[in-house]
Length: 68
Picture 1: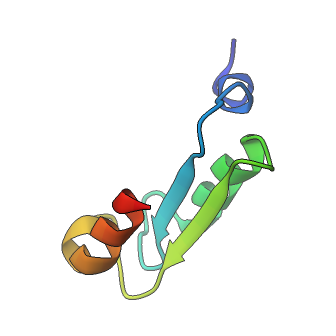
Picture 2 (picture 1 turned 120 degrees about the horizontal axis):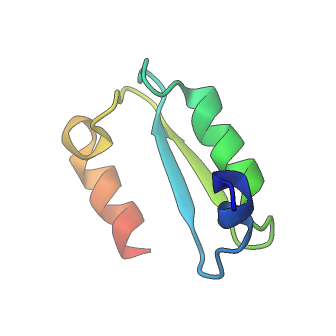
């Protein structure tokens, strides 16, 4: 099974969090991952002013997203 097929089988409420300033992987990769997830469950969250380490660049938002 490929990774896209595996993503489609996820049954929990996944959240894909991507820093808008992250060069590796770029924002478009996070969007692609979210599109491969079941649409009624997935939520894509782009984070402004954040790079690869969303948890260090925007710690309050990262913690809020983890608690939701």
